[in-house]
Length: 418
Ligand code: PMP
Image (cartoon, rainbow, N blue to C red; front, side, top):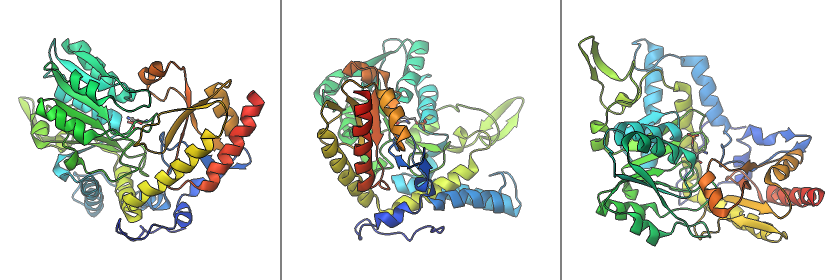
């Protein structure tokens, strides 16, 4: 196992040796129910390379201290590493570090926009536009804000193949719409939305845009500045980083105009009982002790992904998706939800006569981990008129051989249920 951070490799260079890359992920070597694990639940959370695990371990062994408080050596080392992670993440997304709020994940990031940007601004008659394919994290905060302000939530519909209906979306961008919230990549369908074009249309109409990038950043090069949105949310645990890490990027003008969401230590310049002077953004939004070890790990996850090259990651996953889809299409009675032309390696499906949970439970006994259920996207499943689907989601460290094992296991459990 290679504990050091891999040597950075230009995206234009040779593709990594994927068999060797897989060796970086110790968890993938384990067995489940006596069978070699096939981990196809990457849209839920991704596995961690030894480089990330090692960075977290090293922090606690060598320089655990709180950030931005202590003047001693450990405090300085911890603060440098934590702020270094912010810098790396900002470079990775092509944004300024001073505009990147570190937080626990996309759920927190979207709630921060809802409570700190939308709540003080929206009023009765205003509309928040969301797409049909959003994760609950990009629906429920807007409903909560709508309830408190008298605004309403409008839905932009999708087409049966799982792509956004862009004409309908444009038509829905009426003068009442103040905010548009859309996923970059759907966690259920894999659909990659043309967020650059969507944000351009919204901007022309003065609509603020919030992009949920949770399922995009682990799988392709994302240039947030080029997208032209107002807010972009990410989560660390799906991009090889530790759980409880994520970030919100926002334009400086928004960050300066937004009141703090949580109050406490770290987010202030001066406190007296007469009043408090807040710190500058992004620190203004980072009250309390953060997940220091987690962010240090996330910084190493960024190094790791960059060392592979995001273009190589994207190509590898596209190749796995093509193979996987081809094999699934050979199975009688199997229906795939989401066949948009541009899609990530996420496949939701159902097999005639078999309940999604039964399939997932029996597949687990074969060592295969997939998700079944509604994938935190009830309105999307309502659109398709199904109560649940199975979802298999692949990452660059998965293999063609695992796809074959998956198909053998699926055929076996299908017969048991049939
Ligand atoms: N949005 C999407 C599209 C997601 O897939 C997820 C995670 N399933 C989230 C938001 C929420 O992310 P987190 O739980 O890490 O905050």
